[in-house]
Length: 346
DNA sequence: AAAGCGGGGGG
DNA sequence: CCCCCAGCTTT
Image (tube, rainbow, N blue to C red; front, side, top):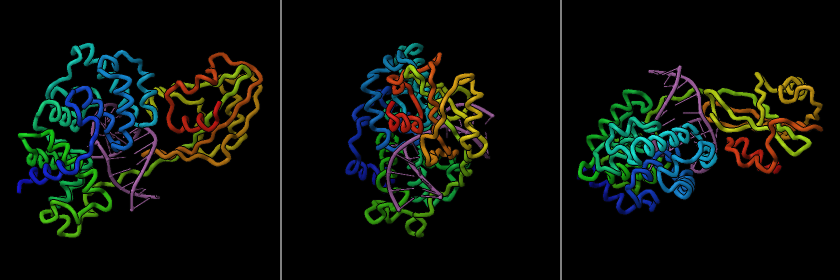
């Protein structure tokens, strides 16, 4: 039996009913694919619903402010996706009259669209036989063919892309691409795959060798670095606090946060007191400092562990460029800040 | 080629 | 604690 025939048969009996499978409109497919980058369906689904409700067309999205897009993206992570999403929406709406490019090569030029996403859109919307290779595809193919080339290397990416391209059903690439991903997501899972009911059980090399749990092979990532974050939650006499927009290169670009004091090691009350006194916003303004969370919050990102303390800075004066308490929740903030705001309840 | 980028969930 | 997720961009 041809690989895609077995796969398509499994898919027709097991596919989930997902909203982006009800359409081949490029705007909706593109939106779903950006949301689902490095994101499980369960986590991305509510965001897809929110974005399609708020922005029913690429023109609606293009006309929004970036701040509105980031606010709707809040909590989903990898915020460059939201910024690139907005950039591409404006480009398609204003330069392409709202019409997305209709082939892999042209799609690849869009900001935020790489090999995977270009292949997904090209196949699903335009029937172009370009194979997708995502985390699911790496897993399915590495097991089925018993391939131990590390998937996070240039060599591995080329090898699996070429293999997927050989296997794709050229008559129906849309179904093939979605089927192999769905199979990886729900059946050929990372842990405890359903080998006992697998339609490929007699052909899977990894299964025959007892190597299913060892594939795919992936080179280990670097260990996360520890950072020490101290946020100054300023409370002014006129019920205002201070939020600052993050700029530059690092995490949470363009999102808001309380004024941040980053220290090289765990900061004491006295450390923060001295730093706060020297802070431009608090210069020559008497305040009362207190620690909000006695237990340090450790917020874990892929590459950073943020040891975080929220410090309450109570002023008996007003401030110049503050944010009134009622509007704090209007700003797009990292989940670390959002959790504090929710608990503190201004 | 390697590093940087989020947050949630499973085992 | 580890790993993984419908990856992309920058260095």
